Every structure is written in structure tokens, then in C-alpha cells.
Image (cartoon, rainbow, N blue to C red; front, side):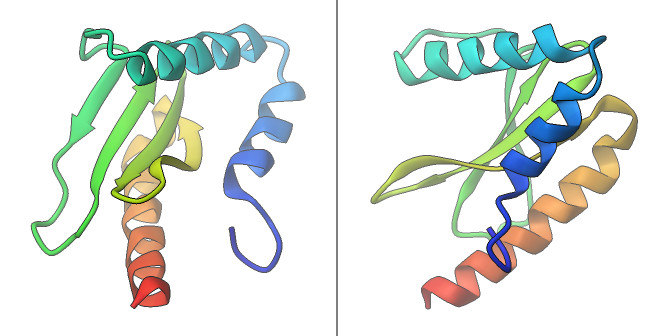
Length: 109
């Protein structure tokens, strides 16, 4: 969240406008639920990301055919949804995730 705007809510609003990917949103939410329930998931749906070792948080990517959600694990609160994106902007979205993690780390310290 920055300046009162939640990145995930912004992404959801974008998804709602695109009838071709709305169902994928629900599939990703189901994947998050499955992961939270301890189910083992294939990497094509839920993937641990390898970011710089300097990051204090483990990052994950929830995947559908064309959408992505990114989250981190925070030891006190658990997994936190950070931002979303599309498959075609995946590299840019992961760079954004890294920037958000840096800001969050600075804020927490």
C-alpha cells in the first residue's frame, strides 16, 4: 500500500474490466487458499521466487494462464499479497516487487 492505494486492489480493478481473465483471478485465490491449507502445489501454479539474498522476506508467485500475484512471507503476519501483474509484464512486475520489498523493509526498520 502506498499513498492510501493498495496495489492488489488496483490490480483487481484492472482484472474486473477484462472479462477474458476474470475467472483466472478466482483460480489464483483458490491457489492461495490451497497453499495456506498446506497443500503441495505444482510450480506452474505456486512458485517460490529466488530474489537477492539481501531480502529479509521470501517471495512467491501465484500463477494462472495470463495473470500473476506476488506475495511475501512475513514472520509475524504470515503471507502478504503485495502486487499483481500479467504474464507478458512478469519481469517488470518482479522488479516492482523488489522495490516494494525494499520500501517495506525500510518502513519496518
